[in-house]
Amino acid sequence: MVMKVHGAVISTATMRVFAALYEKDLEFLFVPIDLRAGEHKKEHFLALNPFGQVPAFEDEDLKLLESRAITQYIAHVYADKGTPLVCEGKPMATVGVWMEVEALQFDPLAVKLQWELVYNPRLGMATDAAVVEENEAKLAKVLDVYEARLSQSKYLGCDCFTLADLHHLPALTNLMGTPLKKLFDARPKVSAWVADIVARPAWAKVLAMRNQQ
Image (cartoon, rainbow, N blue to C red; front, side, top):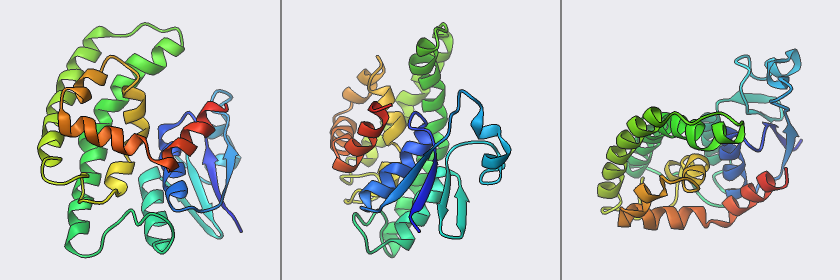
């Protein structure tokens, strides 16, 4: 059986899973879920993800939810395929730390900023300047920490591209298309890291999927 990803190409969480699969050169079937029609709240999808959020993932009899858990499954179970994405021994602990940093420090701010600067304008809704100002300042402090970390290694977890970097790609790509690009450009190590990871061939395939919709 081919692995299945139930989700939406505009979903950053779904894109995260696509990126891992493409990095691993794995075949998969994309099952589009119509978010605007509320398909993610329908009974057939809730059987896969009871929280009604994309993506949901199937690999034979295994069903998973939560994008970061899915990418870790892909990285570990298909360790012999494509890009390693994880490390063995002590370096994996550092990769794990930066995966947590992405989920707990970077992403909550990125979500709020994407809504105000990317999604609300598309939906014809006003941008809340106060929300942007508050979270931009917080993101700047997080990126200062990233700048220091990237002065010690080429990538966040180690000197190899891993899930710690990959997990940033969807939100990072969206933010780079907004005025907040200046925050990344102002930090040389961060800027070089961004340029490196967004140029990966696997990520280009994910963007091509999104652009076809």
